[in-house]
Length: 86
Image (cartoon, helix red, strand yellow):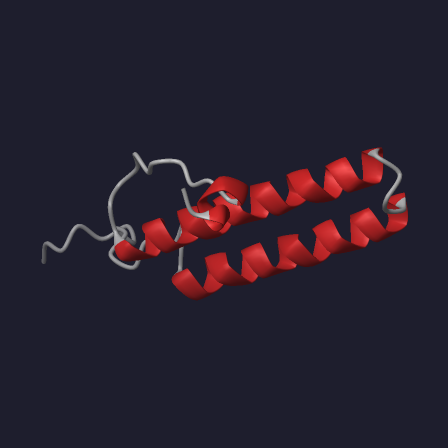
């Protein structure tokens, strides 16, 4: 087993398979893993609560930026109220 696979395990993706969804899922899993490590460091007294908060806040901003770049949640072909009939 690779050390990275052990330290940063990835769960299988079960959602709608699109490249942007797969990338965002990987980013989300990495976010969760890092938040877990930060929480453990703070709980163990290795990091101050303020430092933990700031690091998690930075990770959240990165995740939001990733979501925006990948256009997750946006529906470009969403019906805008017109049904296409004339």
